[in-house]
Length: 478
Image 1 (spheres, helix red, strand yellow):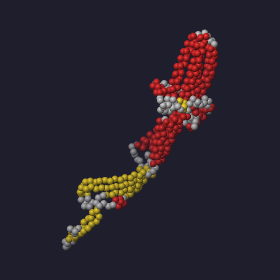
Image 2: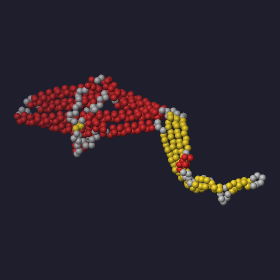
Image 3: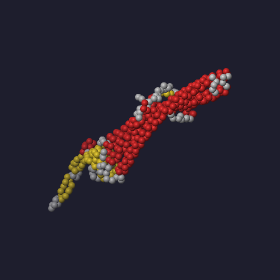
Image 4: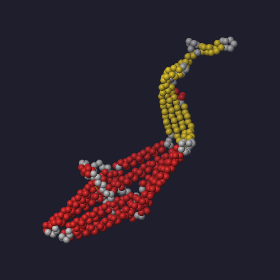
């Protein structure tokens, strides 16, 4: 178990003085579930998964045609040619234009396909990362939960010793009064009782701080009466130690999320390289365009004979010099043609294919390929390192669990021996055959043995949890 971290007294006071309380006693399953639901980092990881889904939609959209429309209306003010007279004059004209363009990639060096596959891998990587954070939170909560249980049991040990010493004090006063033991022994018992009170206060503080640590890990706002279930069943015997360490390692390679993340990142790096290589390939696009325009200026709608000047000479007959006359006409002006008539008359279309062959782009595409190759090598090394880390961690966890079991069994044996020695010391003290100092020494050794049993017990339980975690057994069973 990790050492308790002592925090400033002000946090302790704030914890104990909080007005609103939670009377529920939490089980390990409830603690883990609550932490996973409310942890900020896990919530952020869930948002990362949503972003990965959006990236997938964007990658799929690259397969679809692009459609863009445009419309404009303009005013031309100033010196312009009048289409009715042909003369330049200051006037204001208006025009409306409308257009639409469609384009679609026919071939793009498989970049769209690889980008879509990469987006799906990105979703998988985000889910793995989300799962990993849940696993980490579960381990942290389990460790903090076990720390609370350890401190609760240790507090019971201190309370039992204090209760016994209080009875021993009363018994000693009777023995002193009867002249069976010297008065100095009574003073030793009182000193021991004072030490017991100090130990009890220290144990209470340690329990309070461990509860505070767990409550903060669960992100509880009101935790004055936060407590865990006293009847939490935690087995100290587990069959996983009967497994071969290689079997645990092979199972861990299938189950561990960190390894899956590294493998997925390698596959993403491979897609990045494929996308970069596609930048050297020709691209073929199909396009279609449509446009039309509408003008709002006056137009010539027809002509009529000019009554004031019906004719004009346009030449002479050769030889007779007789004038050749032509009729003069006056143009009839009207407003602009109807909108839809102009739209239909002025519409135009264009379509075709566009082939682009990259020849030289300042080494941009090749540099992207080289960077992608470096990223791929890094991903390979990261996967290899993750495999090595997993193997080392599994073997270390297996060895630690076995060592913790042996330490726990040895602590039980030591406690049993100290229990017998302490009981014998109490019997001798009761008849005046043992000095109080020797009794106190025996008691101290017995209490230390009890504390060591508790420490090794919860250390063993936590290390078994870690080993089960590598074997694919969740921290809490559904």
